[in-house]
Length: 319
Image 1 (tube, rainbow, N blue to C red):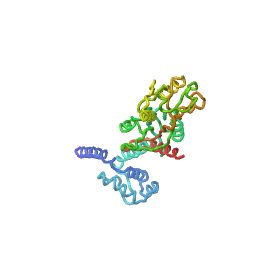
Image 2 (image 1 turned 135 degrees about the vertical axis):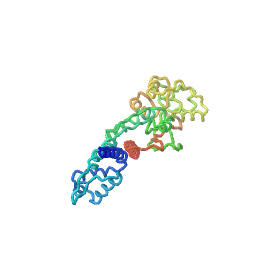
Image 3 (image 1 turned 90 degrees about the horizontal axis):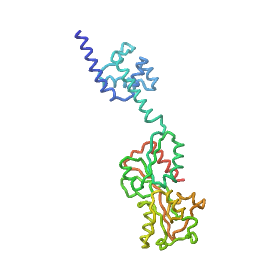
């Protein structure tokens, strides 16, 4: 009876040791063990795994050394699973299965999948990004995309707080050491008026004219709004701003109704300019361009779906 109790106690201690040690070894040694356990033959296991027979022997020795046990009995030219080897089988199978499930969950056989959180200002979200996102989705249908519109000035902090993975901004963040920036393209802005506005007779507006022109502005901090304000300051022009709106669509509707003039990115008003609902006028001897930049936090790990997205955008920017 005492001998039986000692044997039970040993297996309990052995079981605890195996639970602690088994996950510290490479999966391949357990694949080798399972192959040898199936064939009870080192040569046949080596052929199944496409290993050298010496590698199979090394893997079994690794298990026996690390666990301080023997898993096979070697009698003459034959081998047999002993009690410890039989007890190891479910642990080894679990380890190999865990690895398979891990790769299935995270790698999917090399397919690009996952989620990308994108931040972009209203202009780029509504008028520039949609065809890009459509093309990316066709290439990588298993990637989930979320798009959040926000003020471009907030994107560096949102990237640092890991609220978004990538942002598209009209601001230049190249001087920000925590930001990795890729310049993608440039765009231009246009002054727009309604077809009934008397300004369309000249089609050119001088700086001093703005003292009497009702102006509809985007929110403060917008890159082209900032540039326009700087233009007025340089010419010491008192600006007649009658409305300040955060919505480009609202601005367009106000201009269409004849309330005033506004400066907007050309990409946002292409449709209305083509249809004649809005009319472009020129700012004499001056233009206000903007740039489109893709920005990441400099310490961000670029996961496979994000890397594919970045490379897709960079490829498009070169065309």
